[in-house]
Length: 324
Ligand code: SAM
Ligand code: DTB
Ligand code: SF4
Image 1: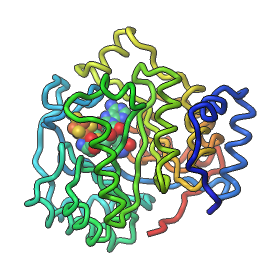
Image 2: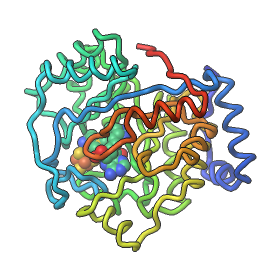
Image 3: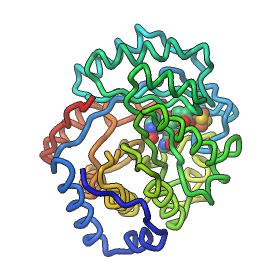
């Protein structure tokens, strides 16, 4: 652990983004090495425990019921199915297991089943994370009591751009859930998506919101947009009406997250399937130290074990052990 600042200004964050690339990455790598083992990258596995049919309108999401994306709605998986998937993930080398549900928020009557999933997955020695949408205070407490290590709830982008991304909720609603998660003693996993047509200023605003949280999120996912046909944002990118992700700009965002939130695990999350090995290597140099492994994220493809084993071998990376 190192002392972390919470008083970052937008100007300071913009100045980091503006640095020559090598200066930025050199600084990020220095911060990284002062806190984390240099070449260790955590392997996390995602499981969609409840897919599709979501009432929200997030403009990037394959699971929003209102967009025609070809994803069919499923009901909540059973505890046995989830624990079996977690055991398989552990056997293939994951040390963290993240369970995602396409809900605006869970129903109170689902909470007992969700708590059992946390118990079952933790008992395997895996670090646990859930992402279930908005939580009430009592729902957050129930998950905390079940021993959930992290709750993922992303702010996605800057406060100014958020209304262009989703209209069925405000970013302020997200911040309220995050406060409830903290109050329940659960570590916060919070980040955003790059490549949704946002500006550099929006990326500065995203990192500024995260880096001024007290405490910082323990875990910061930086997702590269996976453009989904049938969603407003995916169609804009696929149709060339908004710019696709630039690999160097993506690595800059990772570096700025690493420098401003030195103790956080920075996650190179969605979007790796479309990234070259070189682009991913830049992100590791910039301080990313966690990835999702396996062939699927929630509804989209991920590189899979063979490609990632080769990547780890090529770059001399080693898996990070579970801290749970
Ligand atoms: N429904 C819950 C919620 O929105 O909080 C949990 C699941 S939601 C799919 C989890 C996160 O995945 C979103 O907040 C978003 O940041 C990320 N995500 C979803 N679709 C994505 C996409 N097409 N590309 C990149 N990231 C995506
Ligand atoms: C996060 O920030 N990224 C993960 C996890 N949290 C839940 C989700 C990525 C989803 C990518 C699109 C999909 O597979 O549907
Ligand atoms: Fe629903 Fe989450 Fe997708 Fe938004 S990101 S539509 S809340 S599943």
